[in-house]
Length: 364
Image 1: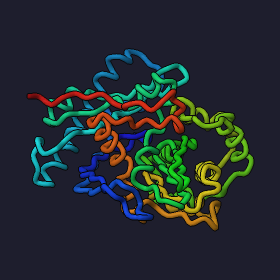
Image 2 (image 1 turned 90 degrees about the vertical axis):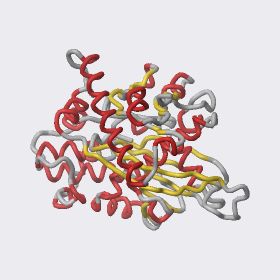
Image 3 (image 1 turned 45 degrees about the horizontal axis):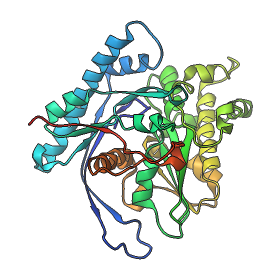
């Protein structure tokens, strides 16, 4: 998985099993055993190219193709390390779920675009690759996002417990599990995306480690109000978004030019926390995963707004916060290879559940 934050590639080697008769009040009929985790940072020209490809520019087709090749090679490095560390061979692996890097997300125009070279990844890894997870849902009239609620439901649902699972990547999304088998979800808005970009502009750091810089600032009430007035936040679900809307230009349009940069950072923390809080109203408990779970300032703000509802990370449910999204695409690959529909129309708005993803076989 490489997400909207554009910070790196995460890989998880995982084994799934299904309980034939789940115990009462068990977390779910799905069991997950994480065998290994590996990560590679996106650095240098590749990261710069992926950032540049988020907006229109010259010679996009060639630049996108070359960036996809570089990104695929990084995916292959992660896969090779996972297999070697576990003492396995490629033939021991049933399938490889590879999300690719989203560079445009415009479901209202009928497309979402993730850069990857799946045939190259199958060739290099020697494993059947499942990719292009979102297009079938978009073709059925859905948003193509978020896709992780189906996995959250399979792994984290528990009878009688109304849980909210919040994934804080570049864009945030929420899964609502009502404890009765019902699943809903949607994107919440900016997660780390604006926090990272603003921090990089004013400190040179790729992200605000542990939220330390943002904690030095003071929330600007007028800026927070102008930000929350964004019409997208009032759209009903299903809804999804990305850098196409929430980029630095969006933030700059709401600034008066005289703000202290660290106060803007504190306000962006408050913006993400408030949108998460609104999405979790009525939940018995909230569990956070993704990179935002490592931001102490953000987690503190979310806990304050959600109180007395308890807020923790998915570590409390048995899966580390940093591994959840990679695990989700491993599970989606498993569903595709067993020909099971993993789309959730109640989340994306598609006309029906669809089998998600396409398969690129490994070399014979």
